[in-house]
Image 1 (tube, rainbow, N blue to C red):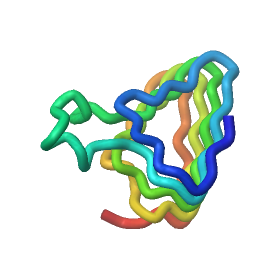
Image 2: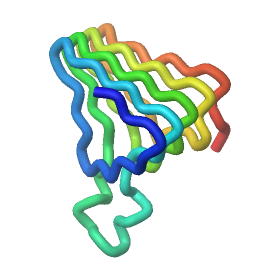
Image 3: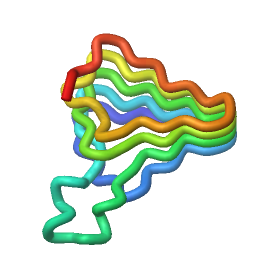
Length: 100
C-alpha cells in the first residue's frame, strides 16, 4: 500500500506477515483527537512478522511498535513518533528525524 499527501487517521494501523506500507508527505495517527474521542488515545502503528513500513517526511501523531522480523524506516520526519518500541529481531531505522 502506498499513501502520499494524505492524513491517515489511524487508531490502529497494522502491517503484518509479508505486507508492505509506504507513506510519504502525510500525517499518520490520531492522538490529537483523543480529547474528543478517548478511543483514539491508543493511536499506534503496529508492524509484525516480516512486515515492512517506510515513512518519508511524515508527521507522526502516534507511536510505533515493531515486532518479530519487522523493518520500519523513517526518514526526514516532520514530527517524530511519540514512542518507538521493538521486540524480537525487529528494527526501526531513522534518518534525520525531528527531535521532540
